[in-house]
Image 1 (cartoon, rainbow, N blue to C red):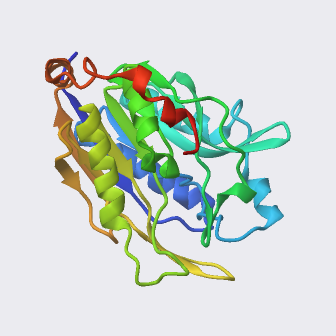
Image 2 (image 1 turned 120 degrees about the vertical axis):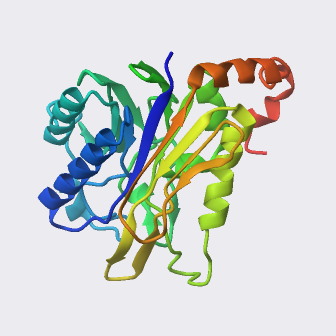
Length: 286
């Protein structure tokens, strides 16, 4: 296993959907030109984040996993550039709808699908209207650059998800994201809490963590959301290797030695000293 250079990106999204895809492609190409073998794009980057409102018309934005033209476009890009690309998309599956990620390997092959497990429901983030809870369970994929686990936005707040993916072999945890202001609490800035939570996942599991957020203000009938960017890469101790600002498009890279991190994880004993038989309360609601 050779050292991995990975990249996180951030971008603003508008109702010019072809332009969003062009922007995402340009970010991937910039990252690859900087040596990245893995590039993370934000959550649902094809469109604005439509979840502040409950409008049935937005279900028309969803597409099936099979034959999805956006996935096909990024398969071709991954193959051309030799990079691994997790691609977030709004999925239609028969009569159900999911917030999903297709994991595209460096040869352009789709390794699998993850459907978001934890679905939030609050002012500005009314995702339960659009998305069913994911039925894939937590998953990891062996790729050209290492073993990856993927969570989606609200998943990033749950330590159980991070621990499960690392137990299954993930060396890197990836979180495409769309998070920003709170319409009913305009003075609340969740950014520090958001960062520290995922940095904690990195430290507690001794795994690399990367999060890619969107930027910009999106105006809706009932509120406006201002996304705070701050995409970052954290090392296996939770330390920040790279961090973007709140408002500018960005491509950030960092290089990590996954083989060395695996050795340090084994030597530190966090997984050796686990006591699964004592963790029964985790299987309850408290």
